[in-house]
Image 1 (cartoon, rainbow, N blue to C red):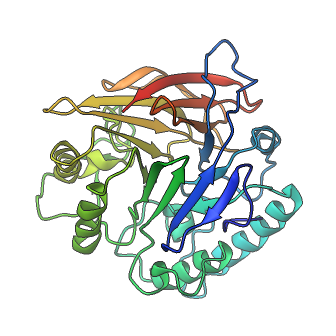
Image 2: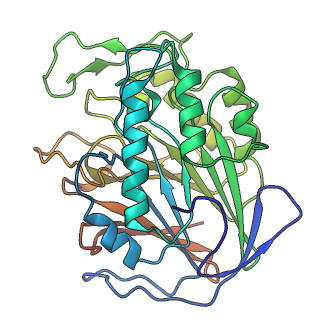
Length: 353
């Protein structure tokens, strides 16, 4: 398993600026479009979530064949919920997943953020008493360097800057667990739209916490040609009662307003968690576009009925899936796609900056 920037399919130059990686990439073409069109691209970033360590992982054959320049693991990278300080279940999950990844012989770098099942408790937030110990296991598993900022501050939020042929790709990873207040349980469990939680209208509650919000406000205004925001849970999606930013609607509104008032033109949000895939889109008051692609699960899909999705583009995709972002530097555009277990594109959309 390689998650630090040791090699790429492009020519890689390391800048003296910490966190900035420079690439010179020849044009590449997609070969498994399944009736969709993808223009020649200079970089391809994969993403996915929810991978159970005790289940087979056939989807990685397709992922390896995709020859990604970078793959983003968006949480639930193991399933090891632990109720005691020893975190034996989480330790065992990481041990098994390391064995899996070693056997898969993944030949691309990986950047990761956690969700609840690698945080240590299902649907957990800041109340989890062992979050600092589970963070140490995360840092160890993903080989995070000793001088990385995640080792010196609370939480796992961080960002990554890629310079592709003179175009900046800025990826921001949010920690939606460490600082999040408790959610409001549903008053009608299992009913459509109220499956597990209902929105809490208490304005004092937080998703990200003060420090992470301040960090994000600065980062989101940094100049970039392509802005990508990673949220382990769904951001735009409304209409269901599972975990999402809509559980804390004023925090969701705060994010939308921050994007609307920023220097951005448009932004792409990548999310996981839901064991299904889909595209979502929102136009802000000033006309900016927020596009969200949910990709879940890599090996634990939960086939089910359609659900309400007023901001969703098209239907959900319930099979095992992963995503791909194609960076077109010459046109200053991206193609966002969702792929099935065979690596075939099942959803795609052109993103213009």
